[in-house]
Length: 69
Image (tube, rainbow, N blue to C red):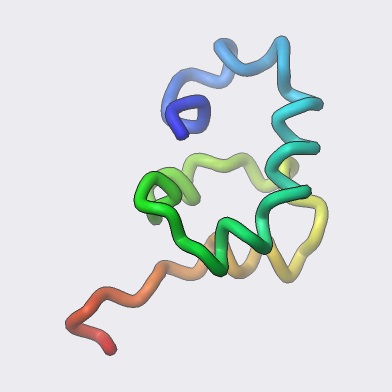
């Protein structure tokens, strides 16, 4: 999702809605792992956007690559 890859000033007008959207869908995103929800995007999500500490830890832990499996 490009909104996490651009300067934060672009998303500041919708920050609260973006936080709510992310927290509502985070479990699903981590389970389904859509192509766009990669480690680069996860690294750009501000810590204060994730309300659940366990979910924050999951997005901060890099996804295994095929070589690591």
